[in-house]
Image (cartoon, rainbow, N blue to C red):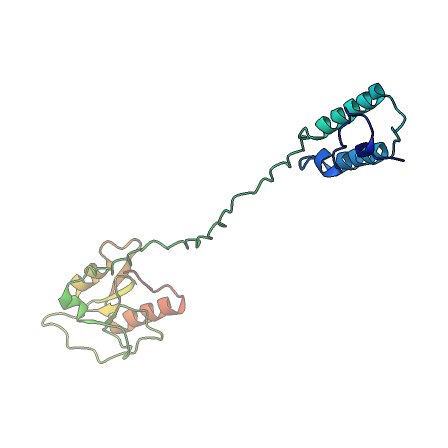
Length: 213
């Protein structure tokens, strides 16, 4: 067999190489197909072929060569979507509830004059004739009777069992002051120490003694 480059016709041209037939833009399958065709055409014996046959053969080669030089469109890979980098949210500290500032309640204002407050007691001795701004924890004790006023056969003892202060006093003004403005206030006049003492201690036993600020 004779390669195309050895044919005797003056019109024949040499067969392009496979490198010229294929294109850089051609995919691998197409290039392999062209290479196979060119390899097969190289083995064709045209030594006894007429000039017209050689010319027609050459035309086919030209067509194949020109087709092989046309850039083959290749699929453009789809652009890969890349998510933008977003910084993770910064955790914010949870605000702790703040208790509202509440002003302390004002201290109670005593309705009693300082001179009266000075006479009141909060501790022992728990004796007859004294006044207390706390409930005595035990019975009051008797004291010697003071002398009677001139021309009087007795003097009143005022027993206060519910009021601003409690106890027993000879001063009617104090007894009235200790029960002034107190709802359900209780005070009573007695003609002797024994009667007043018995009444107050009975109120203690019955838990009926009350101090109302």
